[in-house]
Length: 315
Length: 157
Image (cartoon, rainbow over all chains, first blue to last red; front, side):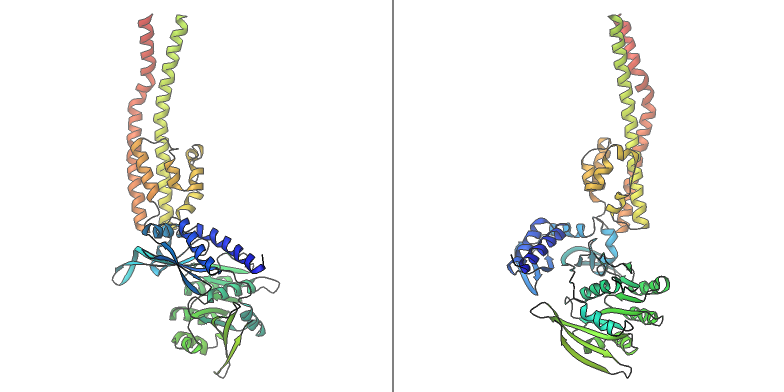
């Protein structure tokens, strides 16, 4: 058996174990069979009530012959929540559930509102299960860019949803917080997926489930980090917390949604962070090439407020 | 021979008496343990929002440990443990406990707290009933079988 096939079977075995903890077995086998046709590993599984099970594998959306029932969805939600919906109520209201093992599922259903505020989600009808993957080497380019600047600059990783921002940040956390040159790192893991399953974060303090802005504030005040990592800056409050923390000498690696540098800069708070030099490097992930390597777009901040664009294919 | 027969009847009646009292006390102990468990679950949900598996993992009670209920609960969850019938509960209390175990964790925080409160008051009701019953009937359990045995011996002799 060649190495690639061996890797594929090992990966499938791990996925089966991972999925068996949250999905009814008939759906696990359907998902694995579906991905096997494509010889790819499973990245996402979508459960929609009354519809066929869908699997995203190697960039392709595949349909399985199995139809998903209401019972399947209830079973999956219960297991994602460790049989305790109440302990995940806040994140369900925000539209996601993160399991103990770091699997994140997007949740869709019927919202119960009170004065415009979502108080509960009932009749859950769709789940989008994303399987976190360790991809060694995914953050090599980001790490080398930071190293070239002696880790004095921050980095903003952007891409369209599902390309691999969180994976890059997760691997970057490993590189920064382990080894002989390990730094004091604070990981603000608001959605419990950034540091999930990472054992080698020897020099990292992980703030799990903290609201991002509050987590940044607490980390700076109490953990004296040299570098901080947080996923998906989503509002002005979070951007303000980053700005505030950077005044204390902490550098940041963060991510944001955006298809291009210009799109990212359309967000006023991200532009403000960029213009203040919080992120010296902007790393765009355009997708992956046929070898599975990221196609990147790199922008540098310079003191004269100008940016230099550099497209590179990372091998 | 007559003396041996009489002693056997007396001994058997004492054993019956002992068993009746032990059964009554056992029901009270079981209900007390269940009430404490529900109270513990409620406090954890209210204060920390800990998932049910986490709550049960660190819960220990002498009665549950002895009856192997705690082991079962940690390994396979409370719903499975309740369905194994390891706790000496009366029939109606057992049905209610199974329902509690089956449903706990399926709702939001306030719903779960209310569920715990409902079942706590229900089991406290059962407990006070059992305590009353034990108080009322324990003299009878204690004295009736030996007295009946003695009467029988007297009649026979």
